Image 1 (cartoon, helix red, strand yellow):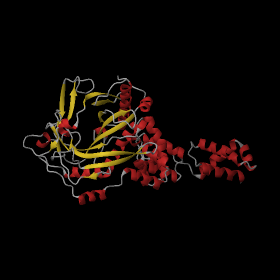
Image 2 (cartoon, rainbow, N blue to C red):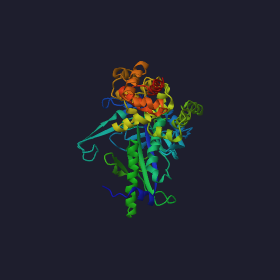
Image 3 (tube, rainbow, N blue to C red):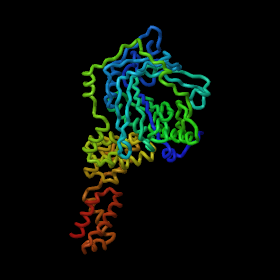
Image 4 (cartoon, helix red, strand yellow):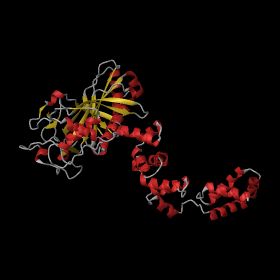
Amino acid sequence: MATLMKYEDAVAKFDPVLGMEVHVELGTKTKMFDHAPNAFGGDPNTYLTPVSLGLPGSLPVVNAQAVEYAIRIGLALNCKIAEYCRFARKNYFYPDLTKAFQTSQYDEPIAYDGYLDVELDDGEIFRVPIERAHMEEDAGKNTHLGGADGRIHGASASLVDYNRAGVPLVEIVTRPIEGAGDRAPEVAAKYVETLRDIFRAIGVSEARMERGNVRADVNVSLRPSPEAKLGTRTETKNVNSFRSIERAVRYEIRRQAAILDGGGEIQQETRHFHEEDGSTSSGRAKTDAEDYRYFPEPDLVPLRPDPAWVEEIRAALPELPAVRRRRLATEWGFTDMEMRDVVNAGAVELIEETVASGVAPAAARKWWMGELARHAKEQEIGLSEVKITPAQIGQLQQMVDEGKLNDKLARKVMGFVLAGEGDPAEVAAAHGLEVVNDDGALIKAVDDALAADPSIAEAIKGGRVQAAGAVVGAVMKATRGQADAARVRELVLERCQA
């Protein structure tokens, strides 16, 4: 285990600088340069054509839908769209690369010079500068057998599946991200989360990180002060969850700080992230651009996106997540803090769907951020994984609004719905949980409670109306909390003043 400095000491002594390289798999029907299916799963080595395998004589053709998706991404990231760009060959050998080169873009990307405003947990806006967004193809997938952790070291054999080879990607590369200070881990994670939300909103990818649709390479370097030149960076490869991104940045800051504080030097290298303990380990010496021997791809003509087409794409972009959240907060009457809590809980869509079912925004927020958030925490699951739908919450709230349920009964009904017993109306009927509002039954319960303690009636007749609370409590107990408490109180006062 590497020597680590306390995080608080590390960020006090050094200024962290980040660099993020995020790959997103595009949701096209076919691959980047051929008609092989772009699909997840399937038997190994079945989604292939000669182009996918780089066989002699096969020629690539650019996927027009992928180009449009790349332009959408560039526009959503406030980038300039190139009037002329081209593909290049990035030369290196690895078994998952069928051609011994990757078709990518290098010095002439399709989108460049942008930025993304990232909202942190406390509402602060941090601007991340974007250097470029370029198109490329994915590699295949290696599976190493016989090792302890699935890595090549210690493996006895390796298998390769080329189904993913040629899947269209856009890689988004930032400029050095400076000024994050002790919030660098949060900035890195929130940046990727914001990208994920944008990819989904503009319809270019499912952006499911657990499937590898979005992968982040996280660059970290330290310098003595913000005025000093940039330090030597490391690149932690293929980190695929927000929590892991935050942990990887934190670990690298602590590790590098300990080395620099001890008079050592940081090696420019790639590193592997270990989910089990949040550590990173050395991979290989970092390859610089010149080592890839980039040169223009001779089998693909340059691209010249028509400016009119680009403007059509811009005009057709949907409302971006940050704009949508601000609009919803205004429509719902939520404070900034309330909306941040909703966003951080991943409840925006759930509340929006619940409101669409007819529930008042405040009531929708109460259910999702209260009872259901507590249930999710107890079950150690995400709020979206809770086994109840916005439509069911709508039905539950409607029953409350109609006086069929009070809050206590509604929570009981919700518990049975979460257990999979059906919709709220079915559950309430099956368990006899609806509010008792039949005056005949309530009058009998009130009379029984007054008969049990005649002094209460005398107290009420004497002007001490607060004594009615004891009778209300007794009736609620007798009806297992199913009586309409307000109606019970009215009946108590009527019976005592008759």
